Image (cartoon, rainbow, N blue to C red; front, top):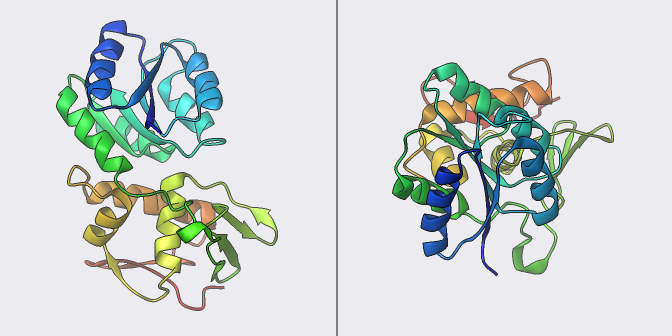
Length: 230
């Protein structure tokens, strides 16, 4: 089956441009031109990836991404005309996987889309069998269901946050460099260490008030899951 991409932008010329490049690469492309339509189509189509503009009528792209993350683990590539760092951080904080600043190269957009889709999702069971339950302290991590629970309460993690947690929890005590995390979770040369830091920060915040309770920073190297986490 063709990979489904939803392109969301209120500028029809940009949607047509992106659609043309993606369809040449054999993607199945759908379009929305405002925030409410983007959320509705995401529910109906269950796309693999959403190209999402920040400045949308009805509901802006940041809020669309925030709401989308409640029911979809689609990869999200955000488009913004504002280059300030705070906008990029906000976009990543609500669950976006990457961003491009307008004007952008359509070829670069296609390359980033392919990079995000290069790795199979963690939710795919190996050989058709459910993946084993992981434990990290009082966390129960179910890769097959993409669920994390503590005291029977499910935690609300984005797709990337979940993938990060699984990667670390599979090897408690092992230190992963930022480069290793980029290669395994993002599989692309387009990302930098800042993306890892933002997602680690978001993951820690959702796991608990103590920032190093489950995931520890090894200064100058990277991160590791805490062995014997409470």
